[in-house]
Structure formats: structure tokens, C-alpha cells
Image (cartoon, rainbow, N blue to C red):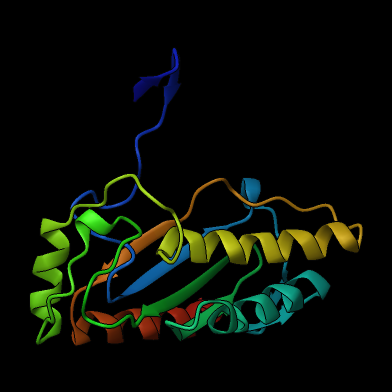
Length: 183
């Protein structure tokens, strides 16, 4: 933990060598505060969503309408968390808001893009159009629904992510997500 303005602050859980706005697939888990079962119950291996669980499902499905560069992979709303795959499908070049740092070099394949992402380490900057902003928007949507409908609800402050590195891993994660309610 580091000191920031004389307060201890937990270090980021994000991979420091990865640009989370770059082209890629990300497995995320977003948990409710204190792992409370806000979203429904599992019965006979099937997730039964309650009102807030349905709102979470709707908000998840709407992510691509708010972030045009996103496709959704497998996902599931569980009683106290949400699992999902978010695919960021931006063009294979980097544009920033700072003219001096523009780089419009075309990249021929995903592997080359990943190397470029490693060279472009995840630095502090505009926090929009990246994985964190997508998750933040989703959390805001569910929280807003809860407040408008007088539902007592809170998210855990962070989320878990994993950068999916190949098709084999993607299939394992896909199967895990879809089989999760049966577990």
C-alpha cells in the first residue's frame, strides 16, 4: 500500500503492463458489497433473478449501446455477483486526446497490438473508453435503478478482471460462466 495525500491507498489490481482501452477480451467479476445476495436465488441449478437482478441483466445487455466498441461474450448474473466477458473491439490504432502523442500506426494482428499495449503501459490519463469506464457505467446503471426503486443496494468498490490471452482460455472461461449457476 502506498501513501497518497498522507492516507494509505491500496495499489491497483489491474495489470500494470496492459492498456485496458486496447483491443482484447476481458473476463470480469463484479461483486455486491459484503457478498450480499441482492440479485436473486439459485434453485435446482437455475438462477432466478429478482427485480434488481433483472435490472442488472438489462444494464449488462445495454453496455454495447453505450460503448459502441464493445461486444459481450458469455455472462451471468449470480445472487451476489456478475460474471461476464467484455470484448473491446476498437480499431488497431491508438488515438489520444493529446496531439503530441498521437500514434496512428496500423497494426496487422492481435499479437502485434498486444505487444504495442505492453509498450503503452497503463498510465494515468483520461479514464473513458476503457474497461474501468465500462464497469463504472454498468455499476452506475444498476445503482441508479436501485435508488429509484428504493432498493437497499451497494457494490463492492472494485472488480476482478483477467485479460483473456487465447481461444483455449476463452473457452474455459465461457464454460465456467455458463455452468456457474449449476455449481
